[in-house]
Image (cartoon, rainbow, N blue to C red; front, side, top):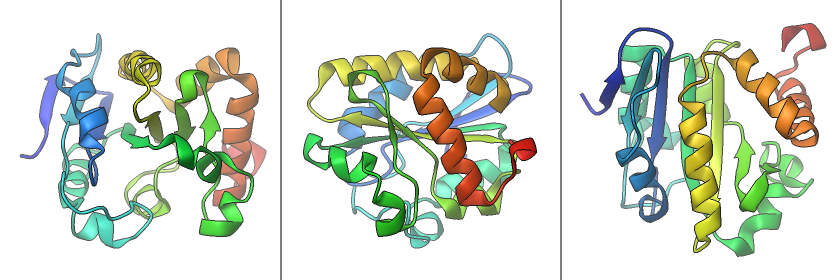
Length: 198
């Protein structure tokens, strides 16, 4: 078993960090110190890989480096799946710019407070391993930015309490209406969904 379990019962959330390269230096300790949720289960993989950098947008990632993630997803069937990544400040525009969908085939991240970014997970794992109503998100922390990490830690601790996608969307629409609507529109466009399917 490659994951650690906190809590019990459903819903099940799976949080992963340290997915590739040196990201673990910025993200792993967030999951190592997290506490059990008030209801349901939280499974964590604080460190997936600290070696080679292979993008999670490359399908090979989940068949090679990230096999422990797929094994956990297949065993646990989580309703909520969260990846925690980190990025360099110089890449902010590449990650949030409007041209990201055309350039690399995935929607741009939404920018939250303290340069924490919110986006979907890679299409490969989203489409192949999760039902449409699952909540699958990526949070990106800005490297060398203590306030970004601190805010991400706060968000992740809140995420462990969400029991459904709808509960998360309601919270996001309240706190970040513009970013939430953009994320919803990107999700619908990317997966070819109508308004009544979200």
